[in-house]
Image (cartoon, rainbow, N blue to C red):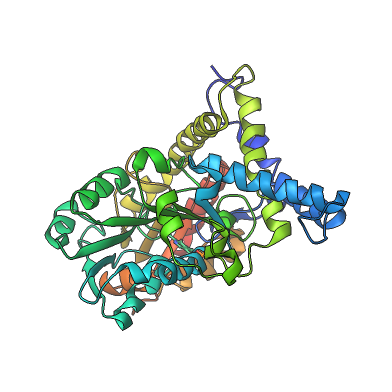
Length: 412
Ligand SMILES: Cc1ncc(COP(=O)(O)O)c(C=O)c1O
């Protein structure tokens, strides 16, 4: 039983986001969430107290090193991994380019990599470029009616030449949850590896890379209440075998060898602010618990998922009932099927008209392809300016959703 009756105390959660003190209802969370105050405080503290070269013996440096190492350990724990299996890098796009450069020598000309036409370009471009080295790219294509990646279609592509399958855990357009453990099981049975993009999934549900048995997994921390950095998980044996992207004398330093130049110090030090925030929510809702960190985080995600489903329900009902509106992806709010990342189009209107028309209501949404250009093209939506996207996270409120619906009802 939680202190607050098993429901997320949304006012409490909001009190930890300084950017929420204004008048705007913020529904651009799939583009980037707001940062928790614990993250801001830790960035400030590192820059004020430890902004020196780390790894030296003097106090400011030693303490800075400790902060960076603690963040790296906590981020790994949050993913359900070991610290030497998680690399902190500047962005998911950059991490994929670094990963593809580090493992391309594992593949021979004629070997196949499967990419999707659903994914953000981050988990596409870095792999597709390997055609230059003779690799063959095969495409796991969505069903254009449903915007779904279907497992039967994957089975048809898997074969003895398949080496790697790159796909998203959750699409930043369609919002549907793909069964990452089942995809991984099928790909492993075919003798290949997976690289899953968890960027759009991580703000909504707990990450558990070991339980899913994925080979590589990615998430961007600026969409997880943190700073503009990204995590790349890789199984230890894969990272050890990967080519060194860094200076020659760092060839044995896993995972640093994948990230030339190393991570941004002040922002890496601030990453522990993300787990601090989850812990603050945990203590508030479950004061008597003595679970381990990964389990505490899972419990908080449970509250978030329930809250998100509850506030999104009237919005889905509105979209499904409104004439001329097409909701992309699963036509449901059910938390086991989707996250509250809603993309839609309006018949006869260019998509960019709608966010502009909502400005007087102080409702922040956006439109376009959100760098999932292949998906938008293959859904036939490029000419109309892509989709309008309204994406919620746990700090959104029922009242904000009412404002979004009322605004849309007037402008559509
Ligand atoms: C699903 C998904 N994957 C990857 C990315 C790219 O992340 P980054 O900006 O860290 O490269 C995004 C960003 O919008 C995304 O939504």
